[in-house]
Length: 601
View 1 (cartoon, rainbow, N blue to C red):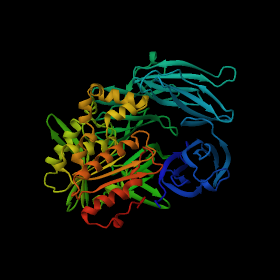
View 2 (view 1 turned 60 degrees about the horizontal axis):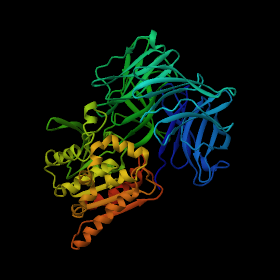
View 3 (view 1 turned 180 degrees about the vertical axis):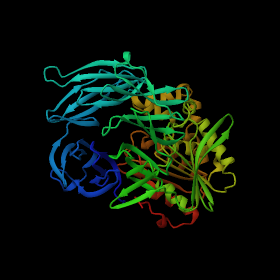
View 4 (view 1 turned 90 degrees about the vertical axis):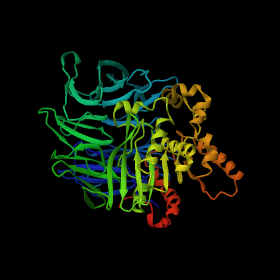
């Protein structure tokens, strides 16, 4: 059985306590010192609580007061919500049914009531936000219908009864009422010419779009009387995911984003304009908040070799201290005997970014293709990479054209060209930087799995193995069988390609079953995958089997694994990692049990 894996984490507003959930039903709480270093106090098995049954799964944890915690549980028979008081230990207060049929986005306590924010996407398009009060079994709308393909929630100030959203990269703030006499009554309070990110008092945090990226900014909430103040730095963010006033010290603005494919933090003092930066460290820190001494960031830390754990970044030492159990370790970490370097590969008029994980005496190589396509390869936890680099496999994390986290034009370069420039970049990597290797494999998940199969089918002579996890294999069928949200996404991404059946099929792996039958192929798919349906893998597997039957002398391997209950989710690699490693390491003649997928070190 795998080790407990952290799925959610929350820090209280006083920065004195931290709680996280794991996938085995554990709720662990820690104390935090002035610097934000965590010390485990207790792990509570939720299954031991009254009215919690075997198979019930905690899916969200959040502090709603400095000493009160809300946990939402997805049950086998019904969903539930629980509250705990945290003193010297976790004390259960309530376990009640949750009848809300929608995902809870955020929660808050206002006076005596727990409030839950949720969203409902309309079948004809658009989205609407509401608040559910579980004790009263009452829900109210707090925005009108946001008739736009991708509206975004920016913030929710429950005590001030304000909610901020972005529609088409322009901000709106709505106010609402919870009074029984006039519940709901959403009112548009203010609009902004830029995306809003947060609000505290009369100050609004913004993300200002520039030609080359994004810059954090601030202004007075009354737009007509306030000038926009941009916070200067030496580079623009390629993506800016968070600009938030720290709840422990609202004069501090925490900015989290991506620059050149790497997560970056900048912490601004809004009074003085001075900033502190999280220097490049091995691994990723996310969901960061300020420590009490204001000298560090507390957040979720992970790296290729370390699954997600609470971590603390120290601005003066430029190190991350990660914590699990009672163990603390400093992370100026680098993987022993391995180089991790960031490069660009020239390809025509473009430069394709990639991450090179290069162990000493590497004897074979693997191109690791991220999903998306609008995503990027970063130092996320990967049990597959962790073990392969120990086995002497060079890993190329390729940020093919269309990847996000770089120049906006680079992200847009793949529109209406799936299976075009991205495939070309993979071939170019093989024929240039990896040309000296006899054995090179392709590995990908989701869109990356689609790319691995398509590239393997078009250029079978270049590859030894193709591993595809949760792929889609037939673009035409994916569109025809997709729901409204999938159809809308594919229309935006593929455009005119959808009108040309022959071109669409030529960019689908099912068109290359004969070529793929000449390679070692491993397909893995979750049985509950609603994004890339299981039948996409079933179809390709059947076609390859049919081709193999025509050539009974082939010695190439074909494996197809399904994983019960697995959806299309982050960190799925921990469920299929053993199968991938066994498949790849067989070629290397390395015993698979020497490279067992586990949790943390």
